[in-house]
Image (cartoon, rainbow, N blue to C red; front, side, top):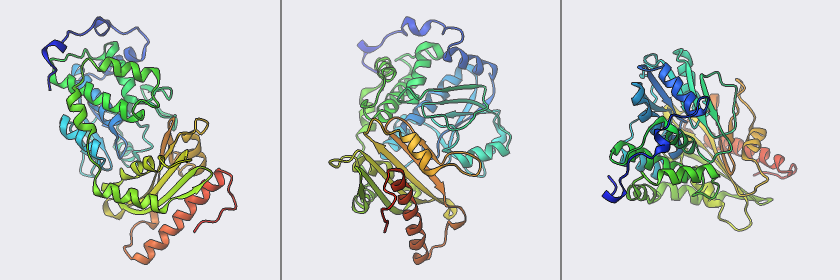
Length: 382
């Protein structure tokens, strides 16, 4: 994994300088120093993507210099082929949240690439255990008021990995190609930037700058292995189902795919990406009911658009609204978004007829909300 001899170099001067006082990097370092020697939980969204996973790895490695022990925890599944490869090839230790996990062992919680609204079960458990929220770093629209010691939310940047790369560049950690752990961090962050900016299609200047900085430290061969994973048969089947069920309206492609396992949840955004390749389509929305542990069900959707004037975050929030606690059911960034709505009382029951009726009800409700939003109030749904 170590780069060739001629690519080795000592940390550049811009890494060795202390960050300016009052800068995000300086403020984050002050917070970490304040909590030196503690044990923190790094919270990711239930279905973490490469941006979240890579940022968590970077934060974990940076915490070592402050003698802070960390565990990276998520509540759902890791099923996307590239995500599985990222975790396995880089040896990233992630822990799935279970009721048996003693949350009282943590002195603080760190939220990366999420503000808690995509990890509601874990957030609730942390609140019950009275674990204080310390840090939030994200690039999505602000979802709710956050009472934390450090907050850095920048929607103007294409990935949270780019924000963390800025921290590294400004002195949080001096990367060294001779340190295998640092090479892993650089490789993971590069993957996070690439995936969350659509292969740099939606990248901002800060994302390009971050990728350029990381290029001196990443392992290109390892990155290629991570990114060249084949799609599973289940993903292909779900994509075919989305194609078959799609309904076209005003350059929107809207598809409900019915029930799917939690293990296949990441096929939803991949199916949305595929529907975007159809001629004259600028926006794709794919959704289905994901069955999790103990027959718990959640309606999960993915939103993709190439229309510059269409704001995914505002669209999703207006269409699906908030829960009883005031948290939005979804949100987004420049070209993509997602939503998840707990089925609640109606979850479970394996009777096929009942399940079909339940799906038809939710499918019709979702479509009607979307049609109303785009000005097709009188359009009938099946």
